[in-house]
Image (cartoon, rainbow, N blue to C red):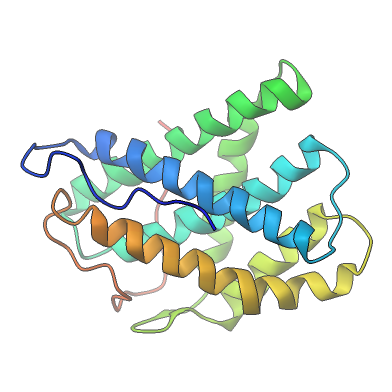
Length: 204
C-alpha cells in the first residue's frame, strides 16, 4: 500500500495551485505504481520496466481525469485550470524522468501529454455521479486501456480486476489526498461531488 502524504507540514502557509499540484502529483505517482505492483502480484505479467511505465501511465491519466472531476465546481475556474494543467505537467515530468532510465532519451514528455489529452477527451464522455464516482463505462475504458498495455497472460481478466479491485483503491487514495489538501484548496470537500460530464486538461 502506498504511503500517501495527505497533509501539509505547515498548514497556515499560502500555496499556489502549482505547489499543490506538485504535492498531489507525487501521491498520484505512488498510487499508480502501487496499482501496477498489485497487478503483478495478482499474476498479471509485465516483462520490462518500459511496459510497467505504460501501465503506470494509464493509472496516471485516469487519476488526473478523476481529480479534474473532483475539482470541477469546487474551485474557481481559473484556479482549477491552473491546478489541473500544473498537475498534468508534474505527472509528465515524473514519467519523463523514469522513461529516461527505462528507455533512454526521447520525446517522452510530449508523448505522455498527448496520451493525457486523448484520455481526458475519452473519459469526459463517461458518467461520474455524486457519492459514487466514476460510472461503469469510465471504469471499463480504464480497465481496457490497462489490458492493452499488459502482457498476454490472463489478459481477458484484467479489465474486471482493474474495475473491481484497483479503481476503488485509486478513488480512496485520491479522496484522501485531495481532502488533505483542502486547507489550501479553498477548504473544499472532495468526497464525490456532483458534476456534469466533461473535464478540461491541456498542455501549456
